[in-house]
Length: 241
Image 1: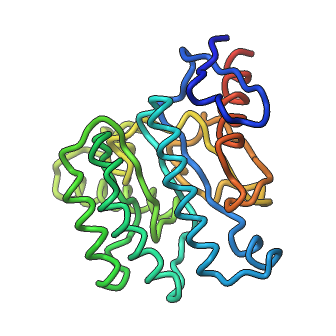
Image 2: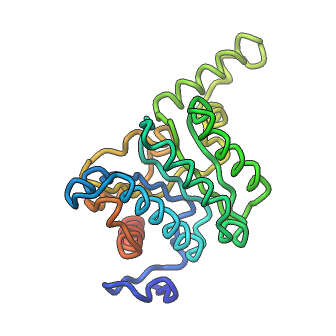
């Protein structure tokens, strides 16, 4: 195994990774923020700051490891009190020099355009500002439901069939993939699930049939470099067997 020393440095445990077996797409399910707030008697706003900081730190680690695609999913319904927090996050992300320096394209998957205009506008802006970047890709699943994604794909295909653009016999797995939100991304090879739940939440449902799942049992505000690298190590051990 070849150690990636510039990332391993500073970790609590000795973690060795093969530079030849780095996944090209990692999906991360963010969970446990509310539970963490209750355990630590914190206000939700304090936890949101940690939640977003951990997202930025994870993007940094992924870029150093040369992982081209990251997808984050936290919740399929956005609460009203979370809107302003998310606006602030996207504004910070837009002004983060790391995005420009590393040519990171930001995409948002889901029905985010149904959210209040004050959140839709900063999302539109960061999508527009980064649309030409092509070195790394970071996706955020917002107002997203995995089953709805497949249903929307089927609806689009049905419309094409109704207009005689395709025949029913032409409908296959590849065509469904072409019409889902993440049509232009490789399926995730590794999915990291934080928090205490043992489900994926339905994220990237169509694309995750062969995805290796890693349940951290760690609340997202406690997620850090060590947890990320241990998930990578688990991935490499599984694909070697």
